[in-house]
Image (cartoon, rainbow, N blue to C red; front, side):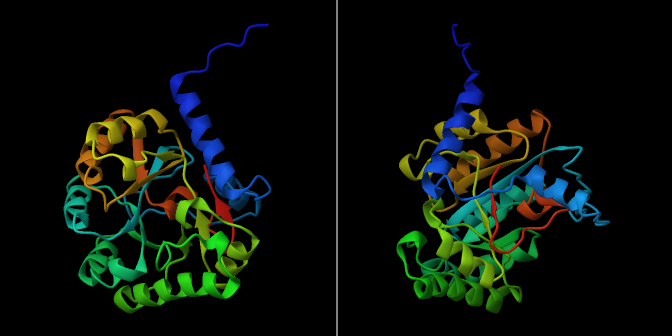
Length: 258
């Protein structure tokens, strides 16, 4: 029996999902944003969806989360200007060494403008190759640096390359950090072509998706206005990762992936 061709976007989403599984390992259980919301409902939670940024209920709205890794960098202020002008809030997974320490005013601005500040380790080492103590050092140093600037310790982390194992999960749980993966990536570390970055994200975008970009590469920040404008035309509401999960919460140690 012939196999019906899959739509282009379905194929792209399947490739991204397979890539993420290959990185994290098939045995690692993950929770989708929808499942996080469902779990809160089954538990009888009377919590309401987050409403700080426009009252979006992701059970009803077609939500998507825009996230940025490995910053802040020299172009992050320009990115923040764009997000402010377009009334979009994002989630920033920050690197401690040479980034948080180098741009404390930008870190403070990210927090002050209502974006979610999260942890992307101290020096971007692959956590699955480290000892438990080394994993703890990579995460806790960034926690401390961010808290010193913003007054708040992150509750979310993203492991470099999406690489995790049981030790990473255990340390994350100990430090109060949920592990956040993604569903759409432009591989913007490999190109400066802003139009290509934009098209890759648009091809992979889906409801309850988590977009992964890097605000440290030259082609990325110029691509963001077009990504936002087109996804808004398609009916998407931009939310932070915690808003995407609400009324569920990101539980420490748990792995979240669309």
